Image 1 (cartoon, rainbow, N blue to C red):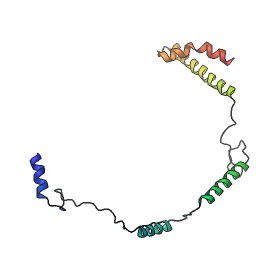
Image 2 (image 1 turned 60 degrees about the horizontal axis):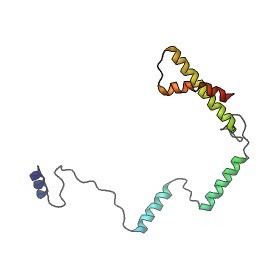
Image 3 (image 1 turned 135 degrees about the vertical axis):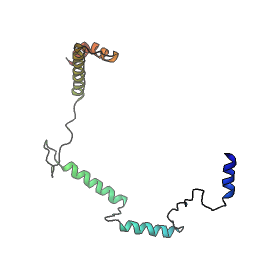
Image 4 (image 1 turned 180 degrees about the horizontal axis):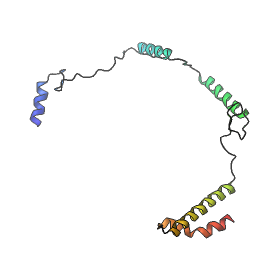
Length: 142
C-alpha cells in the first residue's frame, strides 16, 4: 500500500490535478487593497434597504425614549393590544404565598401517589419518601 502511495505522488507533478480528475474549487477573488475592499463593503451596504447607521448616543436616546413610553403605558387586566398595551405578568407574590403554593403542590403530588398505591402500582424509594412527608407538609400548611 505504501508503494502505491509513493507511485501516485511521484507520477503527479506539482500543480497537476489529482487522480480523481476533478478540478480544485476556487474561492471568489478578494482584492488585496484595503481601500477596494472598503469600497465593495460600502456598495453592498448601500444596496440594502433601510440601512440606518446610528451613533451610540442616538441609539441610547432612542432606547430611553422607548423605555419612557413603556412606563407611561397603563397596564390593565385586558387582552386587547393597543395604546394601553397588555398585562403580561401578574403582580409579584409574597414569600408566604409562594411557600403555600409549593406546599399545596407537594400535597397534591402525595395524594396522587396514594391513589397510585391504592391501585396497586409499585412505588420507588423517592415516591415512598414523599409519602412519609405527608404529616409534615400538612402541619406546615396550617
